[in-house]
Structures are given as C-alpha cells and as structure tokens.
Image (tube, rainbow, N blue to C red; front, side, top):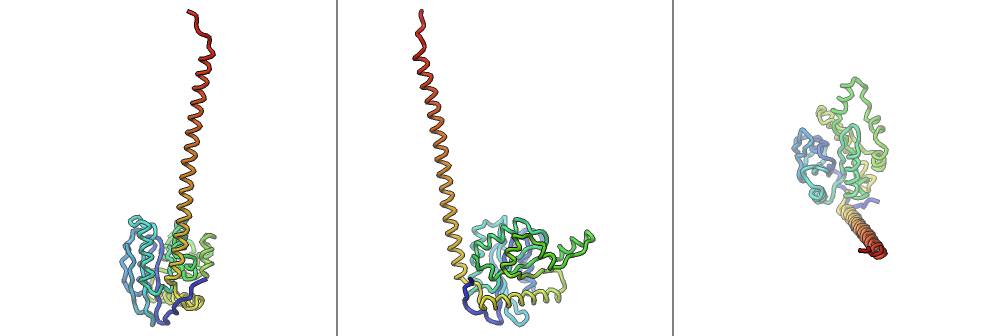
Length: 276
C-alpha cells in the first residue's frame, strides 16, 4: 500500500535512474533531458561515482533526473553505493515521481534479477508502485538480429519472452516500460520520452498523485535493518553450532585416545611377568 504524500506539481517530474553498471543510465538521462547533461563511458565502466541531479524544461514540464552509481560496480563497494542511492531521495525532495530501472534489451540473466532484488530490498515493497522499466541498447539488440539476417521481433514479443521470475516483477509494476534507442534520430527519441511521461502520469494517477517519499524509504530501511539483524543472529548461531560441533569432535577424539590408552594399560597388567 503506497504512502500518499504531497501531490505532484502538474508541471514538474522527478526521476531517479537505477540499474547495474554499464547499462546506459547516463545516456538514458541525456535522452530524457534532451541534452548531454551526464558523462558516460563507452565500455562497461561507470562514470557515475556519486548521485548527480540535472534538470531541463521539456514538453512544458520541468524535469529533474538523478543518475546513481551502478550496483555491483567493481570500483565502489555496495555500502558506498547504498549511501549514494539513499542521497537521491533527499536530492529529489519531497521524493521522486518515478524510479527508472534500466536494463539492456537482450537475454535477462541471473545478475539482472539480483540487481532487481537488491533494489526491492533497499527501496521496499513500495518500489513496485513507482517502477518503470527502461530497456536500453535497443539499437544493439536490433542489430544482432539483422546481422543474423533474422526478423526483428516487436517490443511486445520481446517483453513476452522475458523469464517468468522477471515477468512477475514486470506484472506487479503493471507492465510500465519503454524500449529506448539512444542512437535514434532526435524526433524518435522525443516521442519515446513523451511515452515515458505518459506512463508516469498514468502511474501517478493510480498512486493518488503522490511521489515516493522519505516515509517509504524509512520503512524500507527498517525492514532492511531488521532483516540484517536476523541474518546476523543466524550467522552467529551457525558459528556457535560450528564451534560446538568442533568441540564435540575434539571430545570424541580425546575419549577415543583415552580409551585406547586404558586398554593398553589393561593388557600390560594382564600379561604374565617374564621369567629370567
């Protein structure tokens, strides 16, 4: 059940982009804003080490976009990344209207599922009420079919081909998505951004015209902390059981050796004394 906070201004939208390192979040931000506001890398390395907010006037609206560090970035530990993601809520105060989960078009792997699970734990169950899937690298995905001289499936067919576990998240977020080609002509990209805005405005009407708030995040952090405490207690129990098992083994070895020594002494005592 989402927390219905402060109504969203009709001419302002605030987006937070999340996803794995190298999925093209910065490029997505540039497409949404209609300008090169965010730096991006041409390889799988991330240029975004901390949250950064950029704004632009687009289609009669003030649009704020926050780019976040990628989860599982090899140059950032997970704790640092989590702190940066936490900052993004404050940067978009009173909160973002939509959280854009960026994932490349193509085969959805276990790592994409791990990333999605991680964000759900961190943002809490309310994440699904504000989540929009942004499928990136549509151009590369399309070219892979053309190189094989195969017919390129429609976006709808691609969505239907997603793994069942991923589909469950997709269904619970009411199938809000866009497929984005960042190398498309500007007019095509503009139409895609307009579809995104339409998706978000429809989602806001379902959410009572409210944004994701600090209250949502505080609730999610409490759940996460409680889960971490339970995991910590479980680990302590495992360590204690491991110690107890090792102790039991040592006692068994000790008593086994002691039993052998006692038997040895008994045999010696029973042997007749040798006659000289």
